[in-house]
Length: 426
Ligand code: AMP
Image (cartoon, rainbow, N blue to C red; front, side):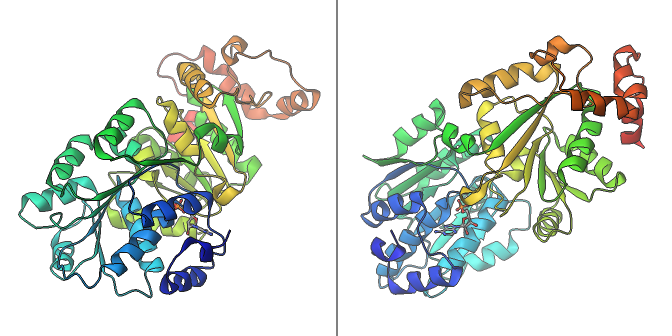
């Protein structure tokens, strides 16, 4: 299969060749004909599958076909959950539409609306937006959605996870009924299913990456440990594996900052991205990570969602997510474009139930790394027989900090810091 078989027009084929794409990905192969036929689409696909092009290419083509119809206001609306994803989708439209006379504007919160509004005063074909800022502007009276004839809901599951459902519904109520709707979601929990049922008319359904299949390609492992030992365990894993291009997931913004600071103090260049960072700081961190200036990016789920980084080496779940689907989203960040990736998770006693839920969802038991220097004090917590390979046993004997550090944790008084923690708090 080549892009030439997909009935795409010459300027788009030229842009694809400019991008260096030769073969459509499975989601592109299936979605492009459906969208070109103006049918509603329900697609279950994650980032990394080429999903952006799978809707951007046919929509650019449909828009180009209607260019004669004069309209100042946007005809395509792409709703996305995060600013990062908004920027990425916008970059994709720019790249794929480089030989077409179509204009696009991207709007998101967290920055002044001035420039965005100015851009909207010119003629616009494609509007890419996060729900909050779009609703704000609609409520200020900007006629942004009256002419929409194509709606894309990208990463719908995340949109709901992030609590955007009310904003999304308010926006949807303003859209013309007569339109084509394209719905993308990595997972299909019941609320997402409900939203898609309400939105789509006789949709064609495409499922490209059921979570288990994606997850199967990724080499996963779990380190059981105790919470206070996680900073030292992270250092251990990064030093053993090579810290290049690692995405570390933290549950909280504060936690993400703390981890990044601790890594920097230990000589591993790291930056944190999360919702409290300015847009500029997030872009700088992302840029530095992409160019290899920093080795580790520590992110919260919301900040990391939709970030497209090619060639990510590792994903480390410093804390396990309490929503099992989030695990699938997170580890999907490694092993992009069909390459097999590596995902490492840390699991403390409190996180055992999360691990159980995750394993149930992905329908497999994640292999446990045994014999590492930061195993929990009580072996029964690991849910695995403590069989130590000889080599690991030997390594443990050579591991000095163990004696003064984590092994003493079980004896420490509440609030008393272990050497590992002191190192972290310095
Ligand atoms: P997405 O799933 O849309 O985030 O895309 C993931 C990555 O794959 C992006 O870096 C795209 O530029 C790239 N990509 C998308 N389609 C293709 C293709 N047909 N051939 C090669 N790379 C692609």
